[in-house]
Length: 266
Image 1 (cartoon, one colour):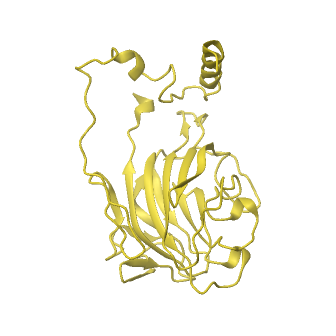
Image 2 (cartoon, helix red, strand yellow):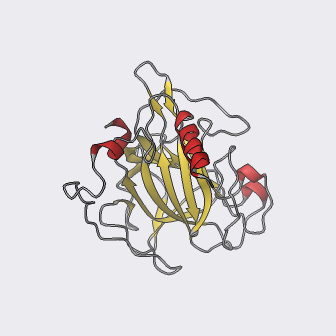
């Protein structure tokens, strides 16, 4: 690629950003003008202890700066979306959906984040298509990342495992067999609205499924929905994380989240 073409592509990408938005690595990023190159007075990154990878037998450990949302012992950080205590079951270090009891969401609200979730669908499989271990991880309770047994199970592309439901199918199907623990590593940047409710920035999502890139910084069209693509509507910058009860069995474990710095408002 020529330097001229690269510069033009960079400029076009910057111009395509929603008005008022800032993205790291573009001319609107204040860090590129605030510091000289190799400035030794520039603050160093904070030191953390990395997490450890899990196995089928053990979930691993979260990074030291993560908020552990489910520790395998209790539901103290969750409540029912219908109100009151969460009614899902905790057993042997995992969280199990109790079909019909309703969705659950975190007590705390979150916005831009790195979210780690491990999940497993029933073995032997139950039914087929969308009735096979169906659940979902909802960022900000509005933007669903699909959970489904997609191992040798045909369904519509934007509803299989690792899809942004109703919007983006995964780049590849990296599903493991039913009953095995699978991982989602989700990088999420929520939308931004001005004081009058005007949309300034689309929500974006990057996801690895079992260590494989399946969503590459996709721009969401709005909240996710069945058979619809509703537009964005103004909402708070932080909202609870929600796990879906789709009247089917499924399990979750090792759920942790790292809040990302809100550098776009600096």
